[in-house]
Length: 511
Image (cartoon, rainbow, N blue to C red; front, side, top):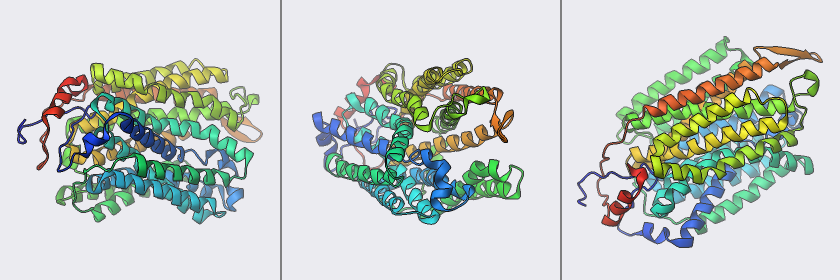
């Protein structure tokens, strides 16, 4: 194949194999070495995602533990979510510029530093700082996903991407019971010492098991763009996440949201004018990429809704006539099978992508998620019923989350894979943040009084499940509008080998 001919490379599943001055891809993609790489990347993604729910079991005790108000203590969780949202597109861009393995090592070190800061902290400011640094480590996941197609042979690339994508949900799900058990067994600082120990394992795994391939494209980081993205995202997401506490009509909430949107619009203009943007918005505007990212918002919304609603329903007192009276640890254990089901369905998603393509696989995943919510409307009377509904929802998330990066990577040049997957991760984060805010509002629409407290009624929970189903089915509709991908231009200086072209032709997911 001539270097100047267009390539119809995979949607990211089989992917292109690049022949650079050296051929590290071929060396790194054989036998047990490739399996070890996949395991290391998935383990790193799992630990990074686990940080999102690490602190939730001790959330009610945080004001007392840190000597602060409940409102201030909530920043311990919010800081991690905001930092993760900002980190994903920036880490993706850095991975494209300097090499993905280097950025993975850097993300792992950030996780270690953040964990140590939290482990040594007993007051609000250092704790929030440490949690924000932990959140920055979430850049590990999009960079790891985009690296998969460079370091794995085509026959396992789809499976590897699916497994890595599943860690987003699996880490969060197993984090709840694991964190509750650690907090109950040892001092709460044990949560962060455990995180620090896991970080050291990840650093070693990435250094020794993940090959450093010649995938750096060079260039410079758009500092102004990175700062603008951070300010705009943080302002808008803080306004959304704190709207229920501050009041949706308050000047602070409206000012944060509107101000954040204005900054993001200005950021977008800057990205279009700068020669080396943080995010190539022209590539992002391609229908296949744009619609996949919009679907990511809807599916991220659907995923988060059940993570907010089901634990609350499980833990509410039985005396309300609604709640099931479970402890935090028990609630986490009832939720854990759903998270593990995401990992179980990774090979199912891989098989579907190879058979029918990533677009229909994403639509199937979102459909299963929506069906799970509809089933939950009628399965709310015991923990095992909610566990069953959660398993169905999580299965849909597992199928869909694996397909999204595959669609994205198939629609962008390989030199922009990291930043494109990072932006997709950001869109999922936007969906989850909006979902948390919407669920908080819906849970106050119909309440019951118990001991001077207003608690959600059965009507509120059903409304939440119904809205979650609608979001999932909106994701299905958007996904079905994603157009088939046309030939992609080969980046200048990149040569597609005949062997790689044959691999692409052999993979059904490339069509």
